[in-house]
Length: 88
Image: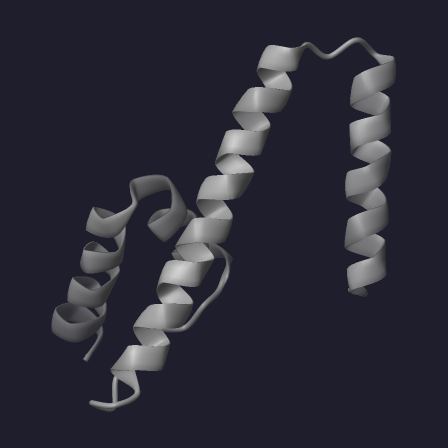
């Protein structure tokens, strides 16, 4: 799907949330999760950037971003371990 469609759906969701009376606490919660997912995606990007020197690549998709974002560094280590020991 087109990225414009994703942004439009997110914008409509935020507007509906504001109109229906969502609290500040819910925005803080969803914002925190969104920030963690972005940090997880950046961690995977830097892992791939530095891993290219030794020939290592971990795909960046929705599942890996969620695992690395929500679990942090232990999640990235787990993804690398699963990739090296189970999938290879």
